[in-house]
Image (tube, rainbow, N blue to C red; front, side, top):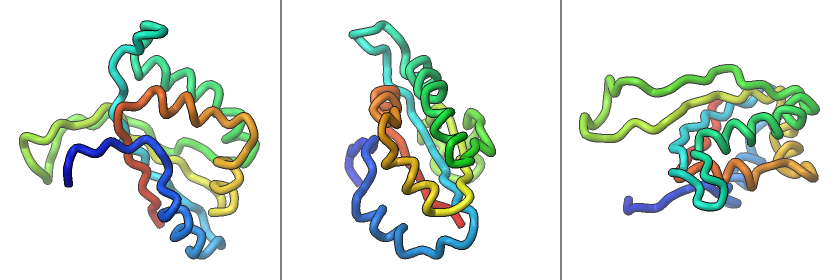
Length: 127
């Protein structure tokens, strides 16, 4: 598996997602590890992520996407005991797959702020 860090969208995964039906809601599980303090601004990754959410919310509202769940992982019930839990989990609900694709292509969408806020992340499509 290695020590790869993931903050960018995988183009192959997007192509695979395009093949799924578009007739039902789309759920994206976000598992996030915040970046340490940003040397430029002195802000923590969590603070930068809050800025991202504030700037991204109008884009979510524009396509009727919503954060349907948000929490801090607290305890590993099944899994390696020595595996570090990351900082936050959230689920974003989109009415359709088309709305998700519309969001990530919108001019001005602050994805660069999300990327700066995170040291590592996973976004997992769920149906």
